[in-house]
Image (cartoon, rainbow, N blue to C red; front, side):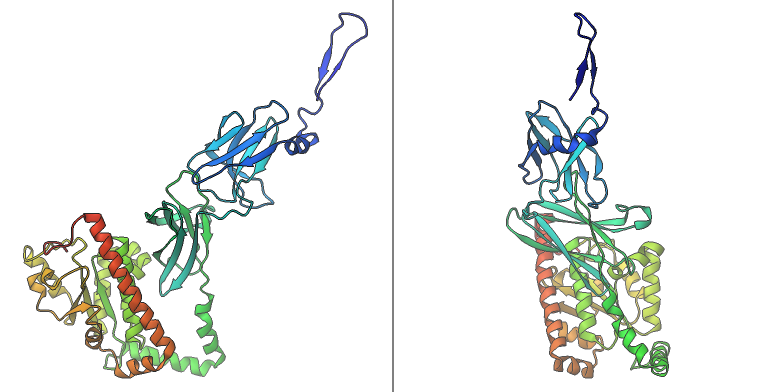
Length: 435
């Protein structure tokens, strides 16, 4: 709104003043109330149609609303294209906190398309198990999802490498799938987002591990004397070798895909649950931070020294669905002799029947005790010195029995998934020349 002023005489100069032009607070709220917004967003496209009472051309960009009390943060290179009152932005993961920011001169308005209660195309939940974090995705569209531990010291969206990814490739039907990630450190939070689009909202998830410390609190209430006794018993069992000591198991593998790594992690959890008695299963998937800090080879030799010192066992998980630097068959006998010499005296070999055949095992390793999983699992547990008393106690406990059964079923499902994944990636079944 402007005012023109002039003298009453003819041909006098008219002066025009627009008092509210630099004062958007005076007219901004009324102006944006007069605009009608219609949301047509769908799939990976944000679309908003505007009906204006005044013939004005507005600018629109994408912003993220982290806090209702703070301004909406404009994202770089996220300007919407306008055509006849329709504003379109491609490659966007639709989220209630990703909004349009409309601007006209010194006034702006935030319009968030999906605040009307429409369901998102995907969701994520988490569960903690051992030294692993399981992210459970549910998606109704083709998509790729990524996750990485966050570094709050460097900003809200700062990441700590590596970045883990998984894809939904089954179309528009609802699909649920898991991404297993090793723990970084207690108290850490993880960022999860859709990575196959240009603009996506990063979900911050913080695992609650407070329930893990309830046992320590109960022990503290028992008194200093009981606590010292427990510490002394554990210390003696660790320092003094003998038949009653909980001997560790070093699980060596050559998993090179996400499906195979999930299977290895599930097998390690199954062994730890089935053996009981405080038995420790050493696997690189559970010690990702230490492996990254000191390197794979120093970590392997340190684990080997511990197994030798505590009279443990090395379990070699043979797999014809992944690569191996040692080659196959008898082409590199020196490499296998080096492996046999470097390992402790107790070296066992196991393989999953859906991923490998007994004939695929190289000749130098066939002299080792060999176990076909999951059929020979009871024999393997006996070879790993599973205590009969521990097994009987576990069977008498309904909860422990159900837990063991669920881990067996999980291993079976992941074995079949690893088989399908290998056939899909290679296009041919595994033969005797592959590891």
